[in-house]
Length: 278
Image (tube, rainbow, N blue to C red; front, top):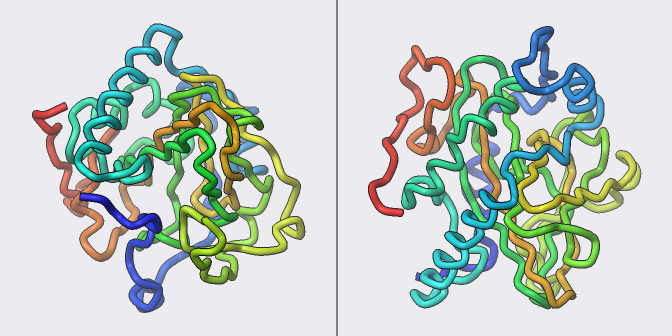
């Protein structure tokens, strides 16, 4: 079934306000990284993101893109839209495989520590000239997780550049904690439902230009967004969400969490199996 455009509305704000959350940035502390360089870890701590990391070669990402093309066609035929493929790892085995892919997980654990959970997967697919922007926002504002030890991996399914509205970051904005936002209204054509204004006071804007098969990784507190795609080219990315295993999830979000490295001795995260269907 079709979902409303403001799909990222998860818990209501009143529900989130009732949860005591630690919304401070927790720096990565890793003297012996497995895959990332010390310079990349230092950049993540300083700027809140790293980018341009090659994960899949041309043949691999072509196969992933072909899979997504078919999946999108099925979703559209069923009445959905290009933004409605959410929590996809609980429905589609191929997405589960990407969420748990060892090359991606290796980068994530260098930032989050040796015990890590993957809990989210969502295609952000801007069709050619779709006219929708993603206003400046923080992921942590939407998530009933605490403490704020979580990251988003953005896997480029298509090339993402200035022409087709790549994602943008405000470097260093994660150091300011949880920021005040205002609700968006329908006239703004915002894919989400929150807008943080006057972002230039928090840092400089950086374009997250990626080639297909590359990823960026950003903190859940980093300000980010993207303009409307006014080009003739599609811009699809798969967002993959991870947190440290000691993070607590409220409102049953722990049911989404897959242990991708280490252990969860508390048993908080449900660790669902790979779906049989692709």
